[in-house]
Length: 106
Picture 1 (cartoon, rainbow, N blue to C red):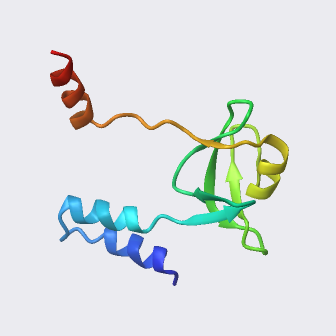
Picture 2 (cartoon, rainbow, N blue to C red):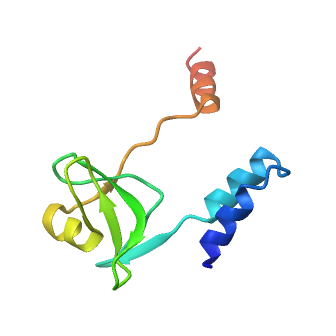
Picture 3 (tube, rainbow, N blue to C red):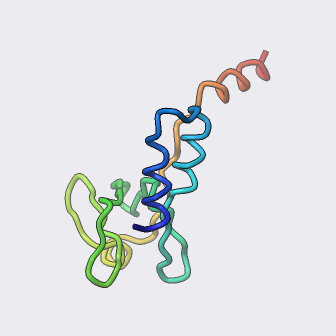
């Protein structure tokens, strides 16, 4: 079992506080390097057409992450070769960030 899988399994422990579970899940993120760029596989990646790609949790026999979009499923190296550059999708702000922004605007 990989380190990431062990951390994800530990995060399912209901005796842990929510913050501890969140930290374990954050630590369990998997990364891959392609052409000098490190990709966080827990993120959604947007290609040059604006199409979102997410990791399926599977890899090819060579260890390349298999990505899925609404239109196709293919290894990350093929996505990169066909539709690079890939950029991380913007994340939605959490409630605490919204409250802080609203307090700052007042």
